[in-house]
Length: 90
Image (cartoon, rainbow, N blue to C red; front, top):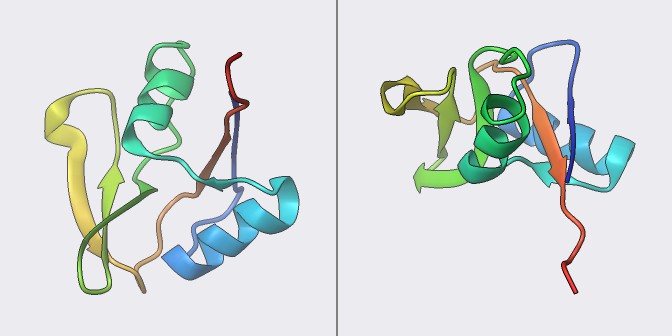
């Protein structure tokens, strides 16, 4: 799995486009973010988008490595962008 983050906060649509344009990847899922950041020992980029929708126009966000750091935000909010790309296992 590869992981990268944007240098500037973005809304969810911009985050999704940033990941696609730069890496042909998607915004990290919560599990990918935990694997790429928490388990790898990399400092968290802060309050970041995930690819998980929770309600109309609202997505899950994650700001750390514990369960209480998961929250939600409207897609127009500015958050850090984390991009993840996984290769299939054979």
